Image (cartoon, rainbow, N blue to C red; front, top):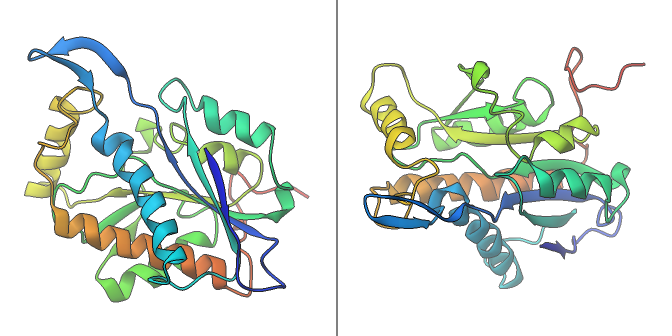
Length: 242
């Protein structure tokens, strides 16, 4: 599913900030505790809903219309290996040079108070500093991935954009080692990840979810309104070599 929300600035509205999430879960599968419907509430239906809510809020005037246009992408096939996002970057609906950034919504777990966000590709582009600038007054610290061996950077829909040279970033609720937040994070992967129990009955911190939503709104708006487009940093593995 693709949708464009036109920007407000005549000079910038032909540039696009991609905001993306993925629609697919696992559908019906092997029963776990008698349940065979793999709901995918936090992976990733909640963030498809967030994209829709953001668009509705902008259209209703609850959020300012950004200067650049927003390209809202809801991909499928993510769980099968980024099939939808890979297809999209190979069949772009707008010229690649008009895509200024991609902010991907996936792997978010609002299970505890939001104080830390791990950001994938945080040191690859100027989006990392933009995220820090947005997060700091909200009491959100932006950190790099402490477990790169898990391959989360390459396992979500931001990766195809980075691969074609579009600055991209995504986020995970972060924690300090040995805390209750880490315990809840690890437990979620043990009992809910890609299981039927990822549903609306699971324990969630709705204040943390709302705080992230506000962070996301502010980040997308900041990127879309900035005079300068995001850039790759020197030394990034994704930077175009001269």
